[in-house]
Image (cartoon, rainbow, N blue to C red; front, side, top):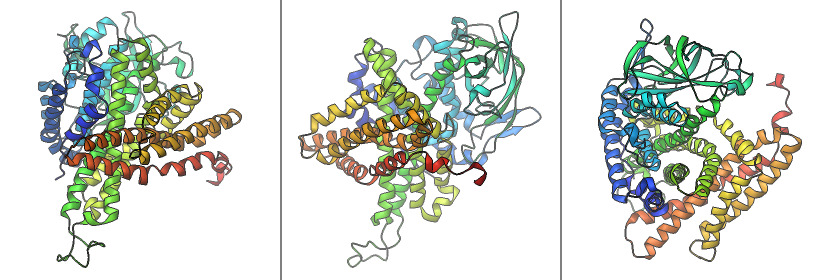
Length: 601
């Protein structure tokens, strides 16, 4: 049976020693009374919930999967999932960062992301039911009418009702401009929603009394393309009454037509949803549904990156335990001295390479994701308008990076850890092959990683002339300038500075080439995102190394800091060089991709 223990020491290191999160958050009136003890207590309780409640359901839930009844169109989740969801309600975890007026605990979003990491590590399939509900809450909170907010937000915060995001149709995935679901206005101000959606995570299940679908559809007079998309609130059951005391009324004209049989996340229902004149209500302005939905989509992209982070951490923990326990082969360095017939495989260099790869991806990803979550708190709660704008710019720039880079790294990291187990890694009972399968979906949904790369390069960098990227570059340059004269920081600062210079030149080169041939941007985008991801990781790994060096110099004897330095050195020497390949690949241009005629494929 796999194990998982919340990485509390590293979470606290990132939040308190690297980001100084409490100090930053206390400057915001909403969190003026926050202290480190509160954060630590929440993390500890959250970790206990994940290890004791969610983890035991992960392996059997994957094996059992969701079950669809074609007669009733109902979906039954794996045994124990409903009980765990009841415990989530009772403990108030769903409303961790939600507003107090809606029944939430009004804690920072940064803390929410830390909790999301832990529960994704313990059970990603189960976590998705709750995570989508959180996204629906944020979308309605930002765009709903007062009546919609009063009725739906308390129910979503309490997890009595859950939420979904209904975008994809069989003939269109990312290209939402092609969607056909239609919405017909009714005399009472509601709309009749007709159409079919596919790949709807948590579209039907037995965990809650009601499911609130947020559906993209077209009004009769809507213009073509994405400019003609509106967003509608379409509940499985119509509310009975209004406000927080609303109950569940008549069944709406929608149903689950089937569930997908997937490679991974078996315990999360991925549904085909059919709307046959279902009653819905407009959310936000007509024909601006995509703008409203982006609140949920961007939150989901950060969440998917964090899912990858959680899976990487879980894989690393299990592989590290196995490597210290599994005895096989002799140490090359100590073969002549050893009195044992074999050594634990942790002595072998390539086993250590695999473990350190996953560890570096996880710990670097944790610093990046928590920093980005802190930007969310800054954007919404900082009293200074300039600080809010700066945080919003960083979020816009880094959202595609955190989604794609962390999920790419997760697939690599979980695969490396599976390899540590050898043949046992391929066997279900050890849990490793499930982590690899679950990690693979994160590279696809919420916008494939290629789409994220195009978004980063095209919209977030080239469209504004690199302004947002230069703002992040200033953070990097300030750190470099501050530590340039430090001999002990040279091994971290020098490669960081070198990569910063190369990013600047690469961006300019791609931008100039794309002006005459737009396909140049498309050809370079995926490699470009990998390079930017490494720039971010190198920055945070250098910051973490600086803290570790300072603590050791001050006399700290905690071996945690030595381990952090060793992992930082591994990252800079073994993983960062990947950028040389990607810079060269990005510069190679579009011709080597486009010159082969389509019929020859």
